[in-house]
Amino acid sequence: MLLFLLALLAQEPAQLPPGEVLYNVRCKGCHAYGQPGIPQAEALKAMSAEAVIRSLERGNMKVMGSSLTAEEKRQVAEFVTAKPPGSFPSAARRP
Ligand code: HEC
Image (cartoon, rainbow, N blue to C red; front, side, top):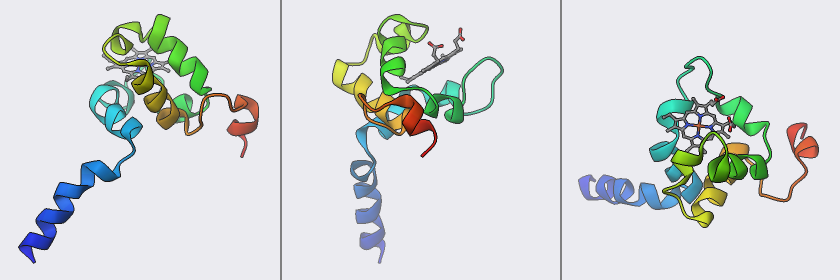
């Protein structure tokens, strides 16, 4: 039983999408606890993935994005917006 639980624990990180792992480690501390002036999960979800990537590349989140690869920026943007780059934001906002 204990071994079974340990195996489950060991597997957990691998089951999370990479964007969610990045978000938990790099973004959540600021973006998930309702601090004034910081867009929360719902606000990020309303953005397009491109807008999040742009912010990480040369917008307000440039400093946070500077230590991420292009691939990681795409993954985290995909996770926070719940849509892949290239999807139309207006269509994705009202599923
Ligand atoms: C140190 C705290 C902090 C961390 C860490 C952080 N953010 Fe932010 N984020 C902010 C603040 C503060 C704002 C609001 C900036 C403003 O409006 O001037 C913001 C704004 C944003 C916006 C809105 C667009 C914009 O440019 O204002 C996006 C998208 C965003 N963050 C994404 C992320 C992502 C993705 C990560 C993780 C890679 C992240 N943030 C990590 C504090 C943080």
